[in-house]
Length: 166
Image 1 (cartoon, rainbow, N blue to C red):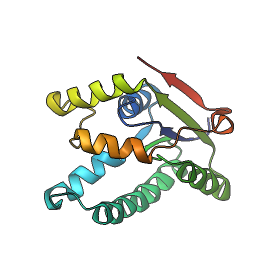
Image 2 (image 1 turned 120 degrees about the vertical axis):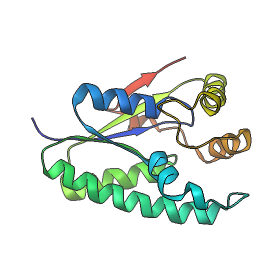
Image 3 (image 1 turned 135 degrees about the vertical axis):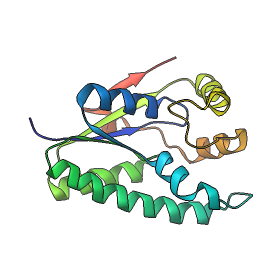
């Protein structure tokens, strides 16, 4: 069986990280969760209030390292799962271009839920701080992410694995 690059995307609170962890256990794949990397590497140094440029620079660093380790993991024959945000159509297109340029077998997974469900999940996750918790998503941050998120175009969903929850 060929190692595959599995890419999870969807809006904030949809259940992407929960899906990624379950998928990794089931398929014996390695999950790379951007929020975990950001929390472990940069949370202690995070400015208050959070500065967008500060965050984007560190996201780019984490993504570069994730891609490097993921490529090595795939080359060793193990599938990987990327949960790295991909809130915008251009972000997802960039991942598709990287996979095509490097010959990586790619499978997108779209995870979604109604906005009121996602908002409640994020609020609960901030309190419970279970397996999928990495950073606190305040109501203001949730609204900010909602403003950045671009739902997939129909063509993006062709061949994608869909996971819709309520």
